[in-house]
Length: 322
Image 1 (spheres, one colour):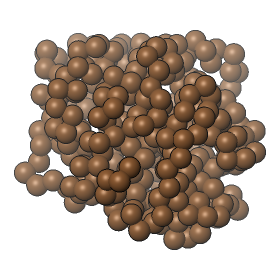
Image 2 (cartoon, one colour; image 1 turned 30 degrees about the vertical axis):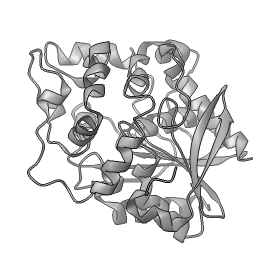
Image 3 (tube, one colour; image 1 turned 120 degrees about the vertical axis):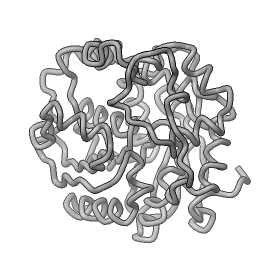
């Protein structure tokens, strides 16, 4: 990996290593020394999406571990769709903790990485010292699986998660990977206000006249490199296991996250608006919610509002004595 890293990360001693976990190998970026913090990226992201947080945490004396998650970058991407259910993704994280000799780890996730972080804390609470979630609240297991619920709620309207069930979705994203990434990461698109019709995700996104400063060109160039090996099919397989995950967690009696938790989100994020619309209260979802905060931002909160996010992470880490 000789390619120039975004966010000035070349100056922070990034090291890459291959870590066996849960029957696969993950490519992991790590930096710094001291207490460990695991940062889990989402879709369509990469380990370097955490660049502003990596710099901050390393400068504060932490050792940061940011894996390329299953199906991404130089990590393994099993062919079987069922290999991407969230129970398996959480087991990948537990295997990482084992590989780094962490009896109890601190994990912070964004977007899908956030969902994985919540599931890891829910299914393996004894292994988690603290869990942080950015941009996706903990919805719990629910009375039905997420996909079935969304299909019922959205009716005939377009919704990307429903669209992502189809092979045509990853085929469309793979046609022009740089454009697909730029559209999703920088484009303007109201997920909750889409009508029906045959248009796919990319056709519904408008690129802004000026790219937002928090998605710099060096980051967009770098993230494209992370999709050259596997493309978009493995990442979309994460979305194709809602029913399987729901079935595999049927034995769980309680939906509550019991470990010390932090939740950060943006007021303009569709997930925040959606959670408000259904009356979701994170204080009810988590029995030890140390920090819950909203800022005026969209979905890519760690990049858009890095100082705010970093301050909150520091506050949370202090609250758990890490």
